[in-house]
Image (cartoon, rainbow, N blue to C red; front, side, top):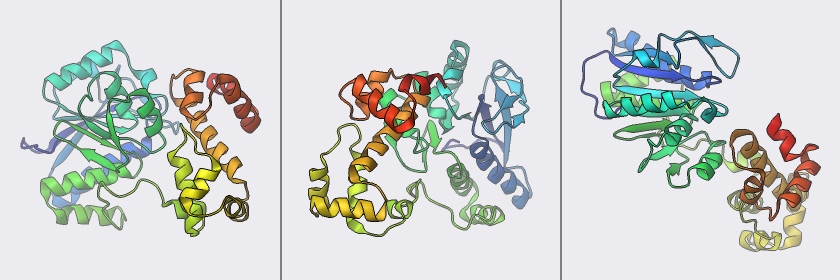
Length: 320
């Protein structure tokens, strides 16, 4: 969805649907465009659904959508959104990479919904760009593509690239595009039709505040958990967590046990192992690399901790 679009209306947007794509993100992007057409009384936007072979594509929720065209039938689009979900890079073929490069060379603005930026990055099309993804996928993306700048914003709209965190964030991105193209009032009217009470800016947070997620407003505890979440690859000692949070180690232990039902050591280990499980399921990083990315010094210590927590080894998780 290009910032500088000045072509004819309806403005055509392509959606490349890949197996196990996020239906929520796709519909959240399309529905505001449809409603904008209806409210304005004229066709402002149009869209076409693409698949690699022109065949129907099944989303992560098991529902299947028909494609309008195969990628080889399409030679130019003003903009294209790559829609993917789990294990996005498994969908990347040489034919798809060649086609994405041809679209880029033809002036198409490329973007990713949810995990779509994994494919654009793997194809070498995100150099010098700043992108966002779903918060759960960001750590894996950063491990896989450390040279690409990322943000945890709801969406990013650049001159030649766009991206969003998926889910309802795609709706906010579409509303932002509508406002830029056709005025803020139309975007408000569309938002109200969607019973979307507030148009979020790209800088709104993807996740609930940490205090809401933890179910507590105890500031020292929130600060301690925030420190843990920021230091998964190189864990802090509990004494350092307590010192940085402005409390004693004994007070830290009491807070965790009273408010969260776990010791701070158990909580911290759980955070690291949760990150490890996601990296095992959603990336091709080898098991040692996953362990190192989550603060374990060896594959044996990582495997012991992982099996103790999940009852299965990292290798078993990876095999499904």
